[in-house]
Length: 404
Image (cartoon, rainbow, N blue to C red; front, top):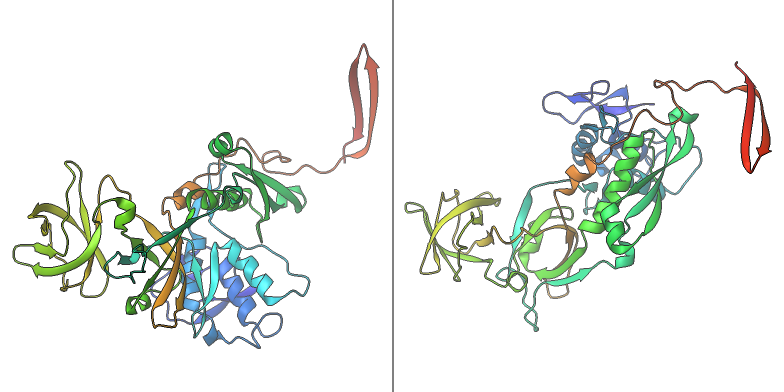
C-alpha cells in the first residue's frame, strides 16, 4: 500500500541518496521497517491515536530499513532483498502481537528507552565498551561475571517454516531447514514457526536458519553489576567481556600511565604475550570509543609498546587483550536495571558476528521452484480421471484429462 517512506528513499531501486533530513513522502513500499512505521503512526488502523511520530524512533527504523533492503542470495542463483513485508492484516488484533510479528520478521525487539519506542536489531555492529574485573562490582564470592547456558532441549536443529507461496496460488507452503551436523551430534530437535509477511522461499529459509544458528551458536548469557559505567551503553549495544577467570590469564585492567612519544602504556597488572601471532589491546580514545591497536613488545610485564596510541587515551581508562589463542568474547546487552545501592545490573547474551554471513548465504535450492515450469504456473486440468489396475502384485495408474 501507499505509506510514508523517507524522502531520500527510492522504493523501486531500494536506494538511499544523501543524508536523510527526517522528512517523509508517500510511496508504495514493502520494506518491513516502513510498514511497521505505518502501523505504529497511522491514526485509523494503527496506533497513531496513542503513539505520535515523535514517540517512535524513526532513526533506528531508518538503519533497520537499510539492512532489510540489502541484497542477499535468493537460493536460485540470483539476489533479493534480505527482508520484505507482503502481508494482509484483516482482523483486529492486540497491538503488542502485531508489533511482535513485525519485529520477529526483522530480527529485532522493541525497547522503550524512557522517551521513545526504539528497536534493537540482531546484526553485526561495533562494540561500544569493554568490561573486565577492574570496572565491574566485585561480589563477595570474587566472581563478578555469572554465566548461564541455554538448555539442550531449547537448541533446535530443524525448523518447519510456514510461508505464503505466490507460485502455488498464494497457499501456505512449508520450508524445512536443517543443520545436519547438529542433528548427527544431538539428535533431531524440530520446531515450527510462521514467517510473517514472507512470500519468498529464500527469505523463509533464512528465517529458519537464523533461528537455528541463534540457538546453536549464541548459548551463553552473562550477568554482572557496574557503577556509573552502566550508563555508557543501552540495550542492544555490543559489549566485550574480558574475564580473567574464563581466560585463565590477565586479559583486562586499567591504564596507569600513557607516553605518546614512545608509544608506551603502563598497565595495572602484568601480561604475557604468546610466542607467535598478533596480540591486540583495546583502549578507549578521547571520544569514548574502543580502539584496538597492535602490541609490539612488553617490558617488565606491565610496560607495553603499541603500534600507535589513540588520541585521548587517559590514565585509569580500561584496556582489554585480544590474543591469537583466545577468541574475542562479544555479548549483546538485553537489559539494564538499577539496583537499590545505585549500581546497575546488566544482562547480555552471546553475540556471534559470523552468524549473519552463515544465514545470508545458507539458501541453496536445486532447479526451479516446485509446481512451476520455466517460472510459469501451468493452469489446472479439467475432467481428471484415474484408473488403477493390478497385475502380478504391481499397480498401474492410467490418468486422463482435458487440457483447458
